[in-house]
Length: 358
Image (cartoon, rainbow, N blue to C red; front, side, top):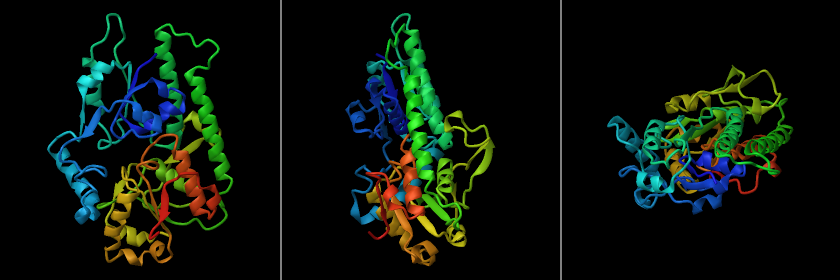
């Protein structure tokens, strides 16, 4: 059996989505879905001094829990300014587990161990005589099409490594074929949800915040999902690109994507005056997101926002959905269609969200 270590939650979810979850031998401390992944040993941890939503220095202190977003941002900036790592990797444990393939990413420099460090570790790992070097596969999707393509890339990579070992699938489907089947089912869900978007009505102006102190408006795939769900995201809109990805299917010669998340002053958010405000901080579940809203609501400009006055503020578990460029972005899209088009029956089961003040 192939042995795979995943250092990124979205890659872990992708691995299970194509039916290769049984190959997982190690994971990052943030890889918590699906539940079967929790059985794998943990390779990583946040560096000392970096508070997280789950650490004792994070939301466990009620007196300053509303300031968690600001404290995480400060700690991250200080570590990066001093060129200190944000995460630690248990290299001896990784070596003992003898992975053939390590999954990582190089899209976000604060989301996981940097890919250069991962490649350096992979080169140092001992291998049996005659064995191929440890493969490192970096998944860096920037759009929904890229996410779907990554399912195919991972399936093809697994088949390639198995073939090098002389593995014969026999009557069983290849992992590339399994990935293609999963992509087809995800595309079907996307098209079904899109059928409920009313493109003839006035598109609501949406602002999705992926951090609250300081303010960051979401980028990459999130504005794309919002626009496809019938909204506008003017604070970080998408732009057309050519040949975005074959896995998306025949939906036009061009696709659209936004750039990375943008930090913005509150004056821009006030000027935008969104009809809908979605708060989905990267890496935070609902409990600390509520506390982040408490801090945001104390700002003198917050109550005047149109979305606040009309009760159109939603809190979402960004850690599980919008922040992870994996198969559950389809869940996020279905929820957006549900919320922006007043179709509550379209909300996926177990989608973690709530209206502000609930």
